[in-house]
Image 1 (tube, one colour):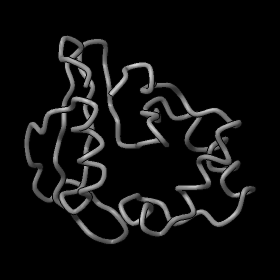
Image 2 (tube, helix red, strand yellow):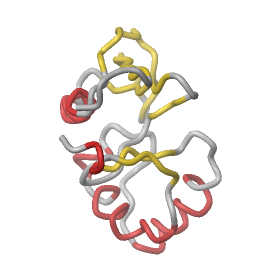
Image 3 (cartoon, rainbow, N blue to C red):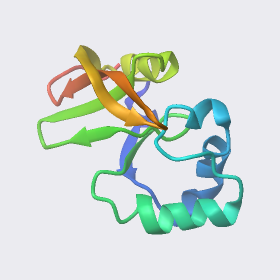
Length: 127
């Protein structure tokens, strides 16, 4: 994969249409803490009031955004539910390594769930 196709950046309000494409899909929001977003107005409000002001909300942009990313200057970490095979494949595709299982770690939509932690260190090779 070309490193130029991957970017890490904060959300912008101009991302609203791309954000709505996946935020309105029940198959995607199944693994998110918030419910499916159903309108452009609701998407704009979420970006403006929740995603943009929050210091941890960033996107890995391939064909769309990815959430649950934490980072410092040396290492990036992502948490992914064990059942979320699609996000695991995306992380592995861009060079993240599965580092461990966090049992009963994440709370999402009324359930306590197991999570995998993935890591990428700045010296790792970008795929």
